[in-house]
Every structure is written in C-alpha cells, then in structure tokens.
Image 1 (cartoon, rainbow, N blue to C red):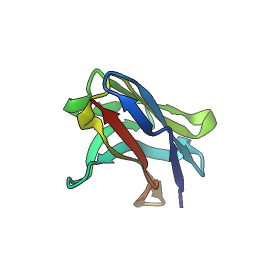
Image 2: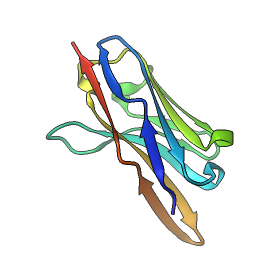
Image 3: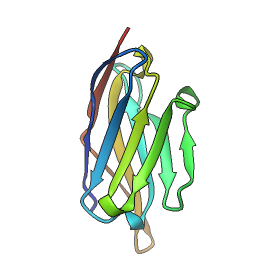
Image 4: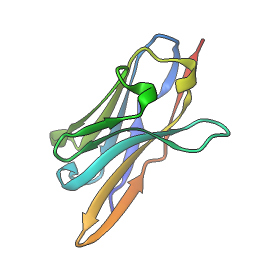
Length: 119
C-alpha cells in the first residue's frame, strides 16, 4: 500500500505563494494518477488538480492559471505550486494516489496539510 506524507502548508497573506509537497513511500512511476484535493470547514472535499503518469494535468476552474501540479519521479514526490492565493483557498489540502495492483484500482490519502490565506 502506498503511504503519502504532505508538507508545505502554512499561513500566508492574500496574493502570496506556497508550495505543497507529497512524498510517496513507494515509487510513483507506477502510480496512475496523483492528485491534490482540499476541504474547507463545512464543505465537501473537492478536487484541486491531478497529474497522470504520462504527465497529463487537470485543474479545478477556481485554480486554473494560479496553481501548477508536477511530479518528480526521481524523488517520488508530487508538488503543488500555489500562486496568487486567495482567502477562499483556505482549506486542508490532501494528496491522493490512484494505483493498480493487478487488475484492481486502489487509492491512498495523506493526512492533510493546512493552508490558511489571510485577507
């Protein structure tokens, strides 16, 4: 099973930047999709961005042009660069990995990292 550990959260002023990192316990070369999700208080968890093993990316409309997802296979890491942060980006951010074992698809979640954007 893949274990994920996020880091890089914190408190930042509106307009600032943060870089989140997610380190996998196993090689990410075999992970089909890596993604970042977020959950604000009182709201459902929502997709922020995903990246496939082939490098294809997908972003929520609310973060397009501001956030960039990337993966570093050599370091087994998935990063989320967040620029031009807004107070509405405040949430706990979770890393997710979707991977196959045989014919079965599994997914793993990290413990989350808090991002707080002050106005």
